[in-house]
Length: 332
Image (cartoon, rainbow, N blue to C red):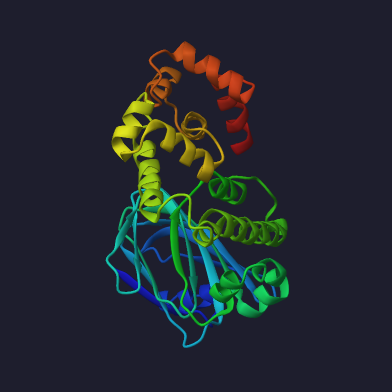
């Protein structure tokens, strides 16, 4: 088991290299073989803004523990997308919280953050660390629009926030990890996506969470937690024909409340959300496996492969077979 403690004031990748006892290769660090497989990258895309990202396929358990600073020196946004297995998030002295498909962590340097990745976990991460000075220089006009929000970001209080991934953040991952580009352009891609991640998150965080609290919140925190727990239920039941009745029984909301909350938080209908998840899984299976189209259709809850093919073609513009051929050619 690897237990890595790091300081917010230090270069994250360099600190990991010291902890692992291996050399950092420029902006890249390969995981030690005793831990598993994977590569991590880190770039300073602006003075005060560092972006790190990479993939980890672990054979042993790894724990990442941030040591809090005395004052608030920086803020970190960490996106994690778990392709296989699960992780645990342990904020401060609280109990561990299981994370199935991934999530977004937002925390200040004066707060303690503890992430646990068990063995046999395959995950992707994207980390943007901003100094408070960088935030003042670049986001001050946005942050100061509300006194309470301004105090949250620039005040002395600790910030520790976690939420499951939404489709907007998953798309950010895909743009970074699944797009083809020349490695010589990597630093430009990272700079672009680093800024996008910060803007997306701050806009989302203010509108969907903090702004709601200021306005007495249309939905309670408990309601929000139950809604995001429901998204995990949907993820693991994509092979079934999930009905609205099933979802309302699972979450304990009325149909109208559940539909309203989905549009409020995810900017789409429940069925649109489920359909997008199914097509994401279908695309992955078509490219990365040799599963028969009928098998893929069944794994996504479609009783008829013809129905699946027609819906796929309408959504993607080409048939599943054509999609498989086209995207495998890109990988070859």
